[in-house]
Each structure stands twice: as C-alpha cells, then as structure tokens.
Image (cartoon, rainbow, N blue to C red; front, top):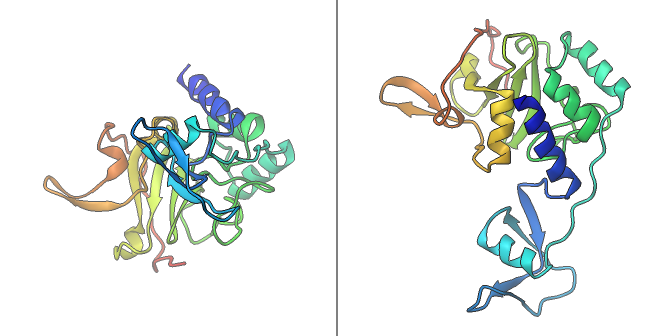
Length: 230
C-alpha cells in the first residue's frame, strides 16, 4: 500500500536524523573539486542552509553537518486525547506516524501533546480553534501564521491551506488540492512548498502544491462570519 511506503520512507529519514528542511553546517566553501573546506571562524559558528543544497551536500561529504537530535513517537494517550479534542479520528497514516515514528518535528509537521510546536510553542492540538471549520487539524506551520491542515472529517484526508495574510478574509482557508499521502510524498521528494494562492489564467486562484497533482476537492466549508486572524 502507498501509505505503508510513505510511512517507511519517513521512518527511514527520521532514523537517519535527516528529517529537517534546514540544516546547520560548519562554515566553509567548496574547493575546485567540490570538497568542503572549513573557514577559520570562531568555534560554534554555524550556517543554516537548505537540505539538498550544494552547500549542504558538500558539507555532508566532509562530515561538517551537525547531527539532528532523535525524534520520539507520541504516546497512545496523547493521540487519543488529540482525537477527542478534534472530535474525529486521525487519518490512519497520520496516526501511525505519530505512534510509530515521530510526534512531529520532521519537515514542517507539528505534533500532538509533548511533540513539536510552532513558533508560539503550540502543538497541533493547542492550535485548534472552535471558530475554524470542524474536523481540520493544523499539522504544519510555515511561519507568518500560515498553516497546512488535514481534513479529518472529509473523504481522503485532503489538505487545506490557511493564510490570514492573503487578504481574502473568510476565504483564508482554501483547498491545496492534494491528499495527506500526496502531501507527505511531496515532502519526501523535496517538492513540497508552503501553500499560497496566486492568480491563475483559467480560474481566480490556484495553489502551488496542486500544480503537479490532480485536484480532488471533496468538501466545502461554511466559514465563520468574521475572518480568523492570528
């Protein structure tokens, strides 16, 4: 099954401590042969670079990349409490990831209780808001109050973006047009982007993460009377 393959690949990345989209490397530069040569900088100085970049790969070959800390899975109680707070069961793939692999922390993924948090120290469950559409779980934080949600109440565990900076008011929630398994597969393949809306010649808006995958919207939301801005 595809879910099993995605789960296996995420578990392998987490076990290898290769789960972050940004990595810290010891400063340097590649020589003529592409070998990373360290710069004479104060001890403890690090550069933050994108995973898979030329700098990251060269530093990795020279053992100049700081190892990431291990990630721990969530407790059964934390997952059960999350489902109770949400009012819906988690998608089976997400539930298995939390229980068997990691309580968030890989890529932009947030955890449940005791797991990875956003920039305000909130887990996915802390971030739940009764003013938002029921059944949506904010599983990824991108910064600037932008989140990706998984629909735990509709068919297919579809992904939704939330961007209160979009100027669309009550339509700050919008379909990303892909399922959770496609979204996670996109992260594994290095092609997952922060969701955002942009003008499209054939329709009013399109989302970046749906450009490579057929849209499969299956649910419409009744939005709050007032936009949720925070």
